[in-house]
Image (tube, rainbow, N blue to C red; front, side, top):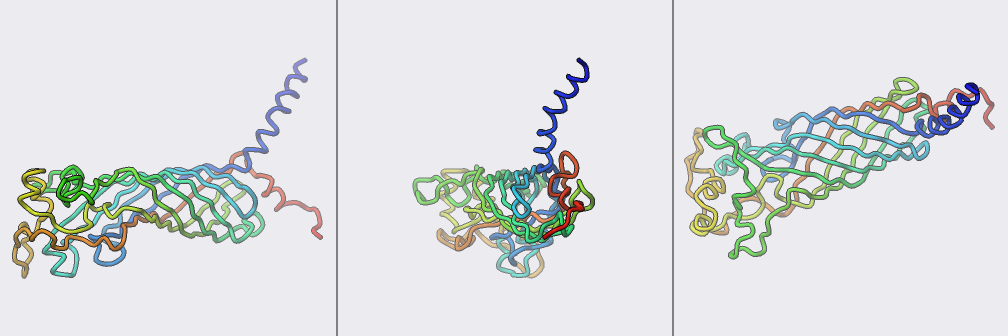
Length: 285
C-alpha cells in the first residue's frame, strides 16, 4: 500500500516538475538614471542612483521568454551642476523614488541552452509610481506636486491638469545573458522607459503669474516655483521671480527613466527540457 502511495505521489509531482522547468525566478541589481528638464545632457551620469528588482520568467520556446517584475530605484537632477549659467540661475532641483512593475517579452537571438549565451532585445509595458520632492535651504524635504508650481488645476490655467503619480511607461532595451550552469543564468542589460509625462521632475512649461500663484497656493508654492533668488554661485546674480509666461522648462519632449544592471535568475526544477536537449547523445539530422 505504501509503495502505491509513493507511486501516486510521484505520478502527480512529475508533470509539475516538468512544468516548473520552464520557469525562472531572480533578481536585478544596478543603477537608475533620468532624462528630462533638469539634465543639461540627455543623461547626467552624476545623478546615477542604485536600483533593485525581482522578477519571474517563463520560457515560451528557445527564443521567446516572458518576464514579470518589480523594480525600485531613485532619480534626481539639479540645475546647480549644469554648465549653462542660465540653467544654474534657475536653481531648480528634484529627486524621486521610482516603483516600476512591468510585463516584458524577451527575444533571444541564440538558443542559450545550445550556445551557453545569447544577446537579446526586449519590450513591454509598465505601471510606475513617482513622487517628486526637493530640499529647502535648511535641508528639509518638500513635496512638489501639491504646490502646483506651474498652475496645475487652477482656473487661470485650465489646460494644465495635475499630473498623476501612477502612470504607464513603455520599457524597451537590450542585453546579453550567459548560463553559469544548468540552473543559474547571469545577464547584463539596459532598459529605457518611455513615459507619457513631462513632470517626473515637476518642470515642464512656463512660469505662472506670481501674485496669482500666491493667492491660490500660498507663499511656499511661489518659493519653489522659482528659486533663482537663492543662488550664491560665483558670477551669477540672484534673480527675481520671472514674468508670467517666461520659459521654465520645455514640454517638447516627455521625461524618461532608465534601469541598467545585472540580472541573476534560477531555473526552477533544475535542468529543464531545453537543457536536457543540450546534453542529449542522440544524433542530429
